[in-house]
Amino acid sequence: MGGPKKATMTLDRSFRIGDIDDRIYGAFIEHLGRAIYGGIYEPDHESADADGFRTDVLGLVKELDVPVVRYPGGNFVSGYNWEDGIGPREERPRRLELAWRSIETNQFGTDEFMDWVNKVGTEAMMAVNLGSRGIDGARNMVEYCNHPGGTYWSDLRKQHGYAEPHDIKLWCLGNEMDGPWQIGHKTAVEYGRIALEAAKVMKMVDPSLELVVCGSSNARMPTFPEWEATVLDHTYDMVDYISLHTYFNNKANDTANFLAQSVGMDAFIDTVIGVCDYIKAKKRSQKVVNLSFDEWNVWYHSHEATAKEESWQIAPPILEDVYTFEDALVVGCMLISLLKRADRVKIACIAQLVNVIAPIMTRTGGGVWRQTIFYPYLHMSLYGRGYALTPVIDSPVYDSQDFSDVPYLEAIAVANDETEELTVFAVNRDLENPLNLECRLGNFEGYQVIEHITLTHTDVRAVNTEENPNNVAPKRNGNAKLNGLILAADLAPLSWNVIRLGKAGK
Ligand code: AHR
Image 1 (tube, rainbow, N blue to C red):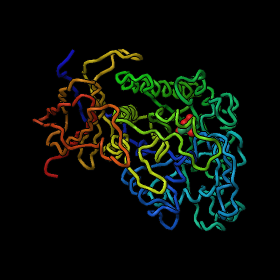
Image 2: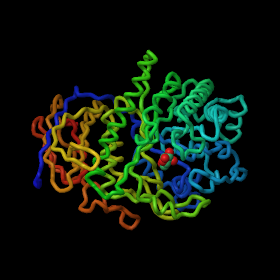
Image 3: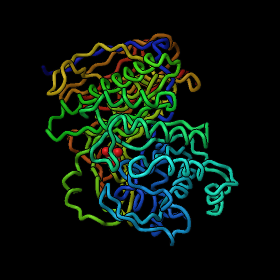
Image 4: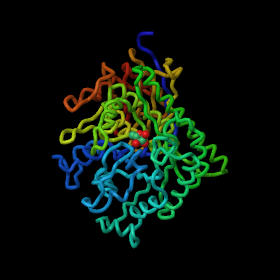
């Protein structure tokens, strides 16, 4: 049916989902393609600093205010010898990198990553190799990174110029170990056993660690969710988070269905929470294991180009998705999904950060620009801190290829008592019609509209490029108005909206 549609939303300060852990706005950087080499690290680049880091890229990462960065993989980590990436650069070995069929020069490793992390002002989320390696490599790496000194590995770190420990608190126990493509792929029992033993020795070295155990690579894996149940049965007492990964695509060229995919992400999150709590009950445990959604994004544009790249190149241009306007809307919906369960999703990483399926794009030896998906991620990271509120939504719905009763309005609200701000993030999934939103506010007296940011475009396939970097860019042109406790706004067809309210007089 044509013409504007109406949706209502009720928000109340007491509809609190939970405090938002800032790490929900994390990102991921893998030794893959040009993520590191030609991305964050390019010593010959005109913007490179003394450490070889591209300062133009650093600027955009800082703009995103990324709270945590997962490293070094990904599939890469399951074949990685972390010892190859430390010490004098000229002595580091070149290796065949089997996961992405590249050459790894090891010119960038753990210490360089920590230098970069400190420059960005973010936190590291380090992964150990439980594919081709095991508990010995894991415990040695924790000793190298976190032990103050007086032992072989900690003194080696000092010898390499790092007198103080890196003090990395958050560690992943391998990557996607349920996936047959993974180097050292394991059954749930095999992985549960090694993850437990690795966790045990890592915590013996540093009891303050927080550990993430691998969940399923995606909700379509035949072993999901039995994998989670078995793995947690082995590791429950030793781990703090279980991982989830999801990538969406629009290969079918069906925008309505593509935009509906986050409904599946909601279900994925709810199921994993259910499994965690089942094991909690089974073990009569008081402990709660939370979720780390440490790979999520849209990924498919680059599949063909990647398949054509020759094997065994250094930093090949692979997985370089050029993101469209509709991808930005899907990324917005995925961010909303994470916040809907902010009570249990404590960490999340957009995959990835630079060049490889990323919001930030560079040309090696050239410029840097923001992809379309940069913007919803930026807005959430900047204005989505505080606590999440359940929006009680009454929206018209549609049926798509994969889902029924998909609400045209996808939304979440975030309140912050310190800044006295309330922000509504909303997507109108309707391809043709505006959505008249009426939002009733409870317990938010004395607020006013600060701004209503929108991201819209007439072409769902519109992209940003080095030559035309602002083709898809946000504008402060929304018409949100607050009348007493009623917020009214017209949400344009296919639009991302950020409606920021603040206490009047602040
Ligand atoms: O992010 C790209 C790849 O996707 C990662 O290496 C892997 O963990 C996932 O399958």
